[in-house]
Length: 382
Image 1: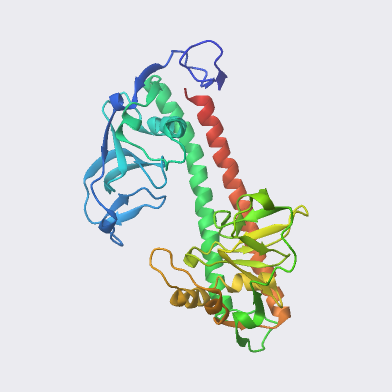
Image 2 (image 1 turned 90 degrees about the vertical axis):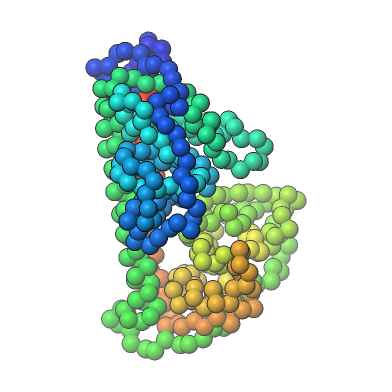
């Protein structure tokens, strides 16, 4: 790689055999841009063709409207998410389908250019707190710069190697999560046990093994880390929002202690629950959107127990509401739960924690690969 210090309309980082300046144009001049026509009802399990929507997941359908090499861009939902496909497929009505107008354009190069340019363009079009979305002109009028066909191909092939590494890492993470899900089922159905344990598990209820929403005897601290429903995803605390009591929302009521478990009360099927560990000696307070569970035995075992498929099924059976199904604390406390001895609880929790730690390591590695890709996009495009 060579660093560009002279040519205009050229990126800072180029392959050393290329010197010619890049040509300015717009996306609409090099690609046809259409939208799909189907709605979500067109999804068919085990369908014959890929069905691209505005979600990360690719679905299937039994009909196709497009054929050939294409870039798919999510117009809402996962706004700006791009995918590449070559073959017959169909698309959702808010998904943009870009296909090349010229043999002088490498679509994989264009996809990387979009990944570099589009996020900044979306942000520039936001007004106040408006939800981001993409219109046809957002794409068609988007300025891009094109190098020669040979340089496009070289860049596309190089970045494809990074994409392959990222995709392989994502598959590794998914496999580990599937393994964990299978182990959870085997452990909590008791079809898999550690060899040292033979005692029957005790059949009880959640309210008998944990205090649910323990009363806050102390007033809220002057400053604390606030955990709301947007802060946690799949057991991971995504943000560390420290706020003052004077600026706290009314739902900030659950003063946490080490080993407490937070259970998502609204849309519990998402399973965005948390096993809480204190950080940096700053008090933490959770939203009343969570049930606060304080185990009388092992908090970490309880955290895994509430993720078992049988427990989740019981939760969903007691939920009310259609768009935002929710369970109340009284119903939650009555849910059946089976417990082994405390020693076995700790053994199970330690085992599953090791799996979680390995998944976390793999996710951090994925984050590094994605950061590397973003760095290269900044340096290799204009």
